[in-house]
Image (cartoon, rainbow, N blue to C red; front, side):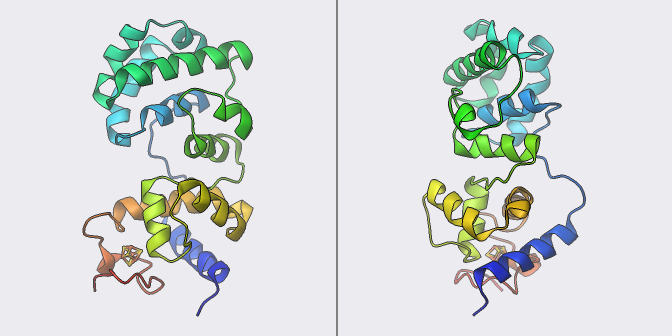
Length: 212
Ligand code: SF4
């Protein structure tokens, strides 16, 4: 049987060769916008978040603007993403902390990011990888499903998946591989009816539910 580390390198090579440029799912123009977008994307789709971001940042372009905003006004704008009252409070508090404690800049340490309301390890890793080029295993639903089916981890808990893969994936590949596998999960390795016959990893995948 192929060693996991060898398999990971092969998977990275195949997917990276098929994918030009950066992979982005949220339409953000800077690290602050990306952070707010990631908070809003909890329990909804990135597409839905992208529909409201232009309006939100037209009204509140900088952390100090959003940090002083009225919760009801923000909730009205972000209503389509669901949980809008809770999310409005989270993004206003996060913006306020960034404006006051971090002089308007999104912080880069895991500890500082996790202090921000609405930010968990997945969101923090998105920011660390995308904005600061730091090693980051980003475990969302697409990534977790795909690495499980590909047999890259036995873990099922997101924190444990992150820890396990952070030991197996070379640091310099972690962020890019996270995004490549996330994209694979959206394009081919879907929760329902995965597109196995067309999947570029079909010969490396031994998932028992594989369909071809
Ligand atoms: S072959 Fe199927 S199950 Fe395996 S990674 Fe590809 S889409 Fe997912």
